[in-house]
Amino acid sequence: MSDRRRVQRQPCDLAARIFIPQSSDAIPCAITDISSYGSFVRTSAHSLIPANFDLSIGLSSTPRACRIARREADGFGVEFLDPVRHEVEEILAETAFKEELLFEALSPALDGEV
Image 1 (cartoon, helix red, strand yellow):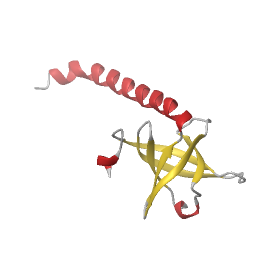
Image 2 (cartoon, one colour):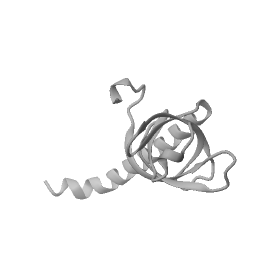
Image 3 (cartoon, one colour):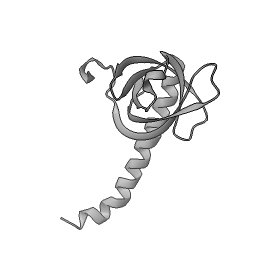
């Protein structure tokens, strides 16, 4: 499947919540990979999720509009709709920056372990 994607997804383990129109309850879920175009979502209620819904990622209170691109036995792949892509790109860049800072902080200690 990854050979058909426009952008390679990054593995992750992010808590998220699904919001369905005309429903007041959020459905907890987990995101196992993500890119600026979409993600893979796992939830025990995946068969109840409609084709279009809003997804709130991590601690964000901003729901992101998305649609289901494919369903699998253990979850579903979603496509983020256009206005959301920029926000997701910022989240990915921020995460990569934090990982880079951590790696740089650990590098002097790792250099001495050769």
